Image 1 (cartoon, one colour):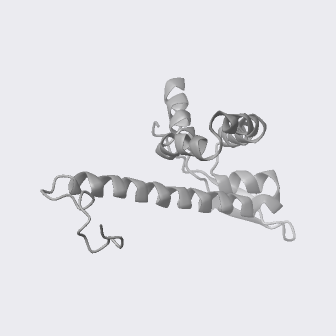
Image 2: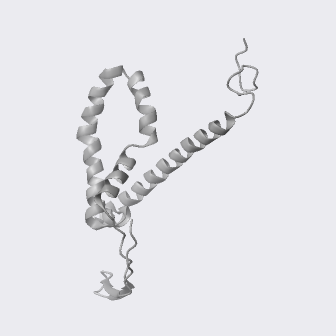
Length: 160
């Protein structure tokens, strides 16, 4: 994303109490994409993560093979894509973060912006754990005796 210039002008806003106006410093302008390819690639990276690639074949296997694809595609078309496009449209149209964007739509939606940030936090923690496991097992695989190759370990409960 490109850097944007900062404006130093203050603006007067109403607090809604008796018509009092308060001067508030102007917020810096948000950055924008330098071209459309950056935007499309970041959307693809957002929509298709390592969790989707890793778990999707397992879900197909556990839930009936090809028969699982029918409800999956129906839910993708009716719920997944519309919600994804709604997020994109709100973010692109308003140019704001989730808290301010939802609170400007309706004051009652103010909490929805916070909920969005909580979900983002959970997904971030989830992906950090996946990457940590990957790094741990990658470095553990360079040892002379692999712990998962033998049954004489302390974590094995069944002995043969």
